Image 1 (cartoon, rainbow, N blue to C red):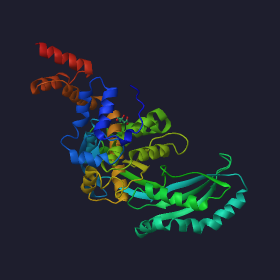
Image 2 (image 1 turned 90 degrees about the vertical axis):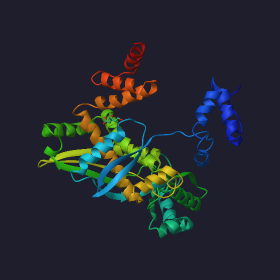
Image 3 (image 1 turned 120 degrees about the vertical axis):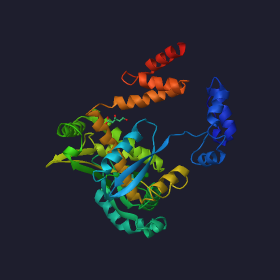
Image 4 (image 1 turned 180 degrees about the vertical axis):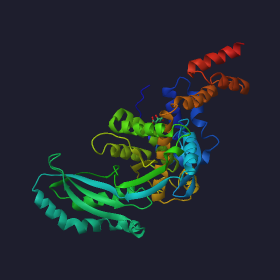
Length: 424
Ligand code: MEV
């Protein structure tokens, strides 16, 4: 049977499932059961999720966890984290506790400006275009007034619009570069609506509008997070040696992109977990953060560390365009719960909390990597996951954990040991 289908979106959910399982699976009944197990007992929730996107058949569950004991600007937080990777939450909790007795995390907002652009082509006199833009500017802003009305009441809106000549980079290419303050909303819909209204008002037969869209590169929507303590408070033994290794690890990530990507991935372990838990757009955050990490032309570490006069400081500045209203924040029950758990933060507070989660992960990773290595801790959790796939009794499980305490954990080795145990 051909797998190209027309009118798929018009089928009922059951018909979609039947089409899918009949066409793609050797055991359609098993596939059906796998899809339906998530909604059989949760119809109301499933129906809610069905409305988020098209062609929804089921739910894809991720673990929702919490990491307590974060102290951020002297306030106590328990962070909600949605992440599938073992050890991320354990690391966050460990680091939160560690820094809670060393002054906690200090954060501040550097800026909250977002950007959107109307990209267009114009094959004429640049000075004439600038004259037209200057003349039109009040009218362009007026065209957005019905859209910006509510945002202006909340203290946000369009900050400015300017004409940018990009013809040196691409023939005939210009843009209207607009800056926005979107307060507690991430602002994607607001920005895009404003831009489309501006483009519509600006267009002329000799101006070819290509597209109007927000930018997820937000280097001016920036938050800073830092921790600090005496070097000797950092490690029980050889504090100076290990503190220096920690700094070297960052220096390496600053000059070596292969390492920088993994280094920053560790930071994103914390950031994404918070972004997901609070119903924010993790793709937007990821794209913006990595662009920022290469802002001088080379991809580098997002975090920094230094020792001055015996004091260790570890910090990061990171762009985060987040929202605490709109989008999924009220619609997704767990996103809503996460925001309640965080005591209904403003977008600025959420930026600070999220950046903290990122720095905490980076601290855990660098501390482990430059001392014992990460595999010991990882493998413990990996072992648990492997054991879960086996039909092991509690006694067998305890035996396997003990057996692999000082042995290398591989999937094969665990399965072989399990089989051997069973034979006995
Ligand atoms: C694993 O998810 C993250 C780390 O690789 C980060 C790092 O290497 O810094 C441990």
